[in-house]
Structures are given as structure tokens and as C-alpha cells.
Amino acid sequence: MSVLIVVECAEGEVKKSSLEVASYGAEVAAMLGTTATAIAVGEVTEANLATLGEQGITKVLHDAEPRLKDFVNNAYTKLIATAAEQEQAKIIILANSNIGAAVGSRLSVRLKASLATNVVELPKLNGDQFVVRRGAFSGKAFSDVVLSGDRKIIAVKKNSTEAKHEAGKTAEVASFSAQLSDADFADAPSQVIMQDQAGGILLPEADRVVSGGRGMKGPENWNLIEDLAKALGAATACSKPVSDVDWRPHHEHVGQTGITVSPNLYIACGISGAIQHLAGVNSSKVIVVINKDPEAPFFKAADYGIVGDVFDVLPKLTAAVKALG
Amino acid sequence: MKFLVCISNVPDTTTKITFTPDNKEFNKAGVQFVINPWDEYALTRAIELKEASGGTVTVLNVGEADTEPNIRKALAIGADDAIRVNAAPKDAFFVAEQIAAVAKEGAYDVILMGKESIDYNGFQVHGMVGEMLGIPTVAPAMKLDLSGSTATLEREIEGGKEIVTVNAPFVASCQQPMCEPRIPNMRGIMTARTKPLKVVEAVGGAPRTQVTEFALPPKKEGVKLIPAETAGDLIKLLRNEAKVI
Image 1 (cartoon, rainbow over the protein chains, first blue to last red):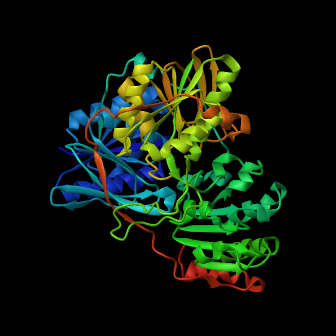
Image 2 (cartoon, rainbow over the protein chains, first blue to last red):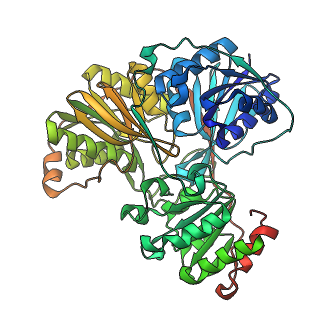
Image 3 (cartoon, rainbow over the protein chains, first blue to last red):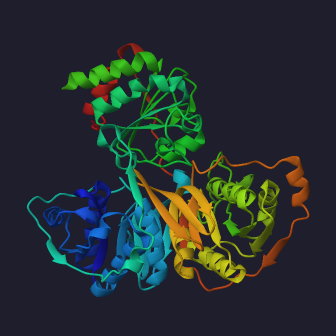
């Protein structure tokens, strides 16, 4: 019996959210007095998988099947189910990503497991009860959920736990084959199109986010957002009205019906702070609001605020960041 | 094509969330319930595809009788008929079992739903239904086109998208920018009153998860304001006080 952790990889490396999941899984394994085994999906080098030892992983299973490079729902599900059976895993832990949710939900039926997504804390063991806290009401609340049954699957929200690094520890990389056939790849994508990310930073995984609202007055002014984001090493985002009028692409829309983010730093520029937007950002550690309206509701949810014109304030902030060196 | 669109009954997006004094249940008092905003993409896209190449759109909700106004609203937007599984939605697995049973019984070709519900935020039901029926799932889908019984979808992945082709039957969970969700017009509202709404009893067994308690996020201590003239001081505070840069 062990804890099985699904580690998503891309372009040869383990994704940041999966380093968090690996640390989380290693802690769960320690709580249960067992070892943490990972199964890798996506494109990755074995050298990089071995470094998962730093997050507390003992062993990493790696299937060298080349078609696993891109996300294929059926193939990934079978791969992980096969690994879970081999390892007799009672607990399976994934990232609460698009891949994690797609695979986790199928796995829960196949493995007769209970499933909790959007989990934000380590589980609590209350006697026989296994309880996890998860985000609900689109960031407006949390719920404690009891997972029943012999097998449990947990999808951990990004940026809700910190990845640990114990330098020098390495994991054993073991070759593994789920004996995948052509039929398992029937729903393989015909094409994968990656967006150009500002500075290569993915919004859902970003530590820092600079976000703009209607107060930016038009897409032609987004260079002010991008300049600050670039100086800070941040991803860019926007409010719903901005993506609705196509000033910015939909994948940048943060809020109740967009994506919810929980970076260390969220800087909102010209966003009034409608309740639907706050829901998407209120698990950010530090929130900065810049708005010329001192009555903007966002100030009530902020840690720091500047009442002023974004067109005047943003260049000053960018210059101040650059001056830090 | 037979479309089955699963809709969830959720608190309006402007709702301030509160709980009963023991924190065991969501406080419904004074809350207006709407069709889950993500589900509106599934509903409108199914209606558009039906209008383009024929078929029927059935709306499915797992809920008690108080969800019927929103089922009627979905009929007013353009669905042909509706099924309500008469049970409180206990958890994602329970809801998925209901959907799978209805889908099997009615031999639906395309099963659509929103990416997730804005109250439970499970993002689970799509995959569970697909697995129960042994058919492909595409989630979350940003685009859906049909040619005969072959569908081409764009699936969002972190940092990009995949183009996926599947044959019916399949499940897709939908999100923007799939379509512009429609609102009911007067004619739709009139005709919705007489469209069939069948009530069926729930199948299956116990849920696999149970909510024991709700909690609200901690409140912010209050905002520290920095004058616009010395905006650059904010950056020093973020480095030295908040330690986030």
C-alpha cells in the first residue's frame, strides 16, 4: 500500500503545480506511515524525475510510451489505474488542473474511489473519518468533506500548498508499462496549440498576477499592465467585462465564471471589485488595488491600495520595481 | 442527433454566501437561484447545433421541485423537453449516476454540461458520466462543431488547447467562448409552459462524499493606503513588509 501521486510534466520538466502535489502527497504518505510513489505523465527526462526526491518522493514510475507526451484522457486514465493497482494505492493525489480533473473523475468510477477536487489543505484523520477541506462556491467559501470507501482520490488546488525542496535527495525512477494499445489513444488530439505566454508564465500557476479591468479604457493601454508584469515576473489577467468585449483573451478572465487564482501577489488595476471577480481572487495572499474611485468595493478586500489614476500610477510602479535591481 | 443537456440550479453569481448557524448547510434564505452559468454554454450550443442540422434537445436536472422554474427557463431558451430526477443532488457521483441512467435509457448521442457548477465546483460529473457509459469525455471544451456524428472540439489545457475529434456518443463539459448564451424571449416563455417535463425517481445508492461543515474565508484586516504621488513606496512595502517580491 502506498500513496500514488500523479505528476504532470511538459517540455522535459515537472510542472510547478505537480511539485506542490508531490510535496503534499509525501506529507500524506508520512501521515499514513507509508511511502510516496509518483507516476509521471507528459514529456519529461528521467533525470528531472529523479529530483522528485527533493519533494519526498521515493519512487517514480515512468512509461516511456511516446504518445503519452500529449494529454489523452483514456490513455492517461488507464496508465494511472494500472499503476494504482500495481502499487495497491489507497490514496491517489493529482493536481486540480484540467488534466487532473479529467483523469481523476474517470479514475474515481473505474477504481470505485471517492473523489474530492479543489482541495486546499492536508487531510485530517478524525478516527475513521478522512476529511479534506476544499474550495466551494467559486472561492467564496470552503467545505469540509468526508471521503468514504477504501480508495480515495484528492485533486489539490494550485498554489494552495508549498513545494518543499530537500536538496540532494533523489527518487528511484522505475520503468513501467501499462501496455497501452492503439485503442487507448483513440481520443488523442490531432493538434496541440500552445499560446504565447507573457514571459512564459502560465496564469493558473503564477506566483504574481497583474490584472486589468475596464478602468484601463481599452486594449491599446495594456502595455502598462504588461510592463509591470514583466518587471515583476508576473502573469497578466483581466476582469470579465474586459474579456467579454474581447480586449483580452478568455483564458485571462479571472473570476467566478473564469479561472480562480491564488497567487502570492495579485495587483488589480482599474477593477472595481464585483463580487464575482472577488470570488476568483480572494485566496491570493496579498492583494493590491489601484483605482481612482475611493469607494470601489475592491479596497475592502485589499491589503494595499492606491487611490489614483492607473495611467499615472502604473508607470511609477514599474519604475520602482526596476529600481530594485 | 439527440442532445442531452445537464443543468444545475445554483445561487445567482451576485449572492453573498452565508451558512446556517451550525455551518452545516448553505443558507438559502433570500437567495435567487439561476441556471449554472457554465451550463448556459452547453444549452445554447446544443440549441444552435440542433437548429443547424436537426435533432432534439432534452434538458436534465437532478433536483427537487423547487428547480422547476429554471428548467422552464431552459425550455424557454429553446430546449424541446425536460427530465427532472426527483432528488437532492447529494454529491457528484450520485448526480453522475442519475445522468448516466437517463442517458442510457434515452440513447442520447451528445451529452453536454457546463465545466463545473459555481456552488460545488467539483468539475467531476463529466468524467464520471463518460466512464459509467464507457464513452469519451472532452473537458473543458471551448468549441464544439458537428459533422454527421463526428464532433471536433477544442479542449483547454493549461497554457493552450488541443483539437480533439470524437464520434458520438460522447460527453463534453463546456465553457466560454463556445457561444453567446441566449436569454429567453417572450415567445419562448409562452411555449415553454406546454413543453413536456417528465419527473423520474432517482436510481443508485449512497453518495461517496459528505459535506460536514462549511467555512468562510478569513476577512482582510483592512487596506493600507499609499498616496498616488509616492506610488513607488508600494513596491518597497511589498518587498520589505509583505515579502512577496
